[in-house]
Image (cartoon, rainbow, N blue to C red; front, top):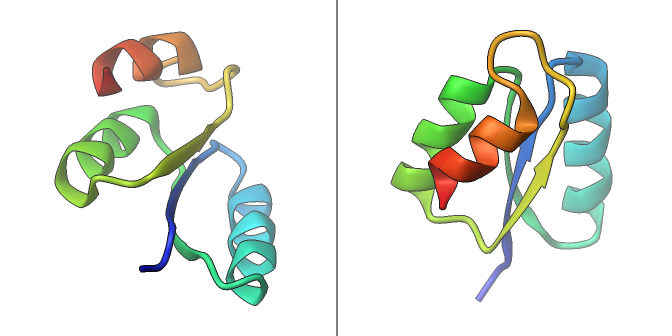
Length: 69
């Protein structure tokens, strides 16, 4: 079973880099650049791990964390 990692960050360069690095180590990654979409992906994709930026413009990371829980 492959570990699914959801990456949520408003900076696309960071999500692209993290996704690429994690994939080279065998992780299945899902990335998004908005908090609202991150909540939806967490509900739909059921990731094992969420890497979350706390400082985002649309919905901050604390609100995303509450939405996911």
